Image 1 (tube, rainbow, N blue to C red):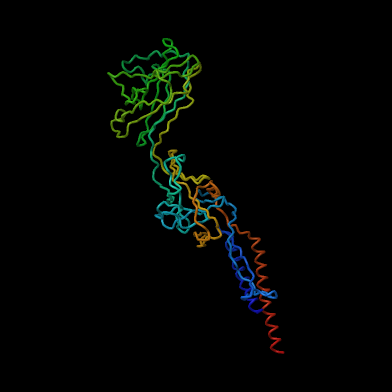
Image 2 (cartoon, rainbow, N blue to C red):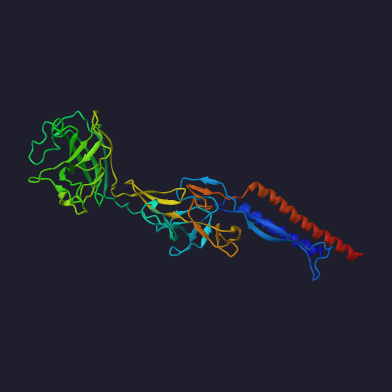
Length: 447
């Protein structure tokens, strides 16, 4: 009986040495989780139970349990290196057409394949939640998985729809001397004496072509104090907007026979903008501008602006422009991607635009130690692990995403080396038990 008891101890100690050796071997493996050998004693039993004088039948390995405590984060310069601070797992699919993930990992060494998909070193596809629209505020569909893909094509242009103008018009200025000297075109951009001031902003059409939208301001003082006229030009071409038309009507090109009509800005006694063409200030739709009125060679959608003058003032101070901005974009080239701690992946373009590509899908399990190991620091769902529960980063216990970082192995190398000595001593002790049993047996045989 002593031989079998010692042999069970040898087998158990050998397994412990294997587990410890594997931990040491993977001390530098990204996302690796160390394992612990768990033992149980063995007793010989009969139908009447275990005798009180039973010495025991040795030991066995009851379980090799992986330890899913957090590993340290190592920071890199690669945005596609990802780490999770929390209990979640990266969701991976072995086929880009898969409807749900089949592999789960803590290893975040990702890269682009030839088709632009984000994959790990084994070619598994990182899964993300599909965006509901073009902005983060529109949310993501947690039930809809998609392989994360980075499209290296140009960023689409965006036609200008909003222009913000925040200026101060000097209350002491008077009507310029050359204003109105040219019939039908009272403001001549080439003659600074035909207007008081001007402000311009670059806008964009539906194809990303740029256009200069300019406003020329003319004081009505002293004839009509606290009143200014604003004349509108696009690429030097005068237009007559009709901002208060309901519904909006197209802006009309001003030319001979069609006088250039301004917008009238009325200020109150405190210098605040009170009325624009008799209506309360705010976002005013100037009406669509036909592109061929600007350039006969253009074939783009009409330019359709909303102007916001609400913060324009008339104080007794020099003319100044505090803000002059618009929301259009030209076409752009991909310059990189960014991933925030909520897992939102954005493609950034040279035109300053960004496309929301998706949100990294994380998964957690009721019992991570029940997951089935597959190698390559990946696991599969099992009956013991419970069903995979998908969720968004920074929600519940899923954890947050750290871009430009990797989770190191959670192996404590010093502790494993100490345990290696203990496992070796256990193996040697069991071998000594066999030697002792052999000596006793030899003595009996020689008696």
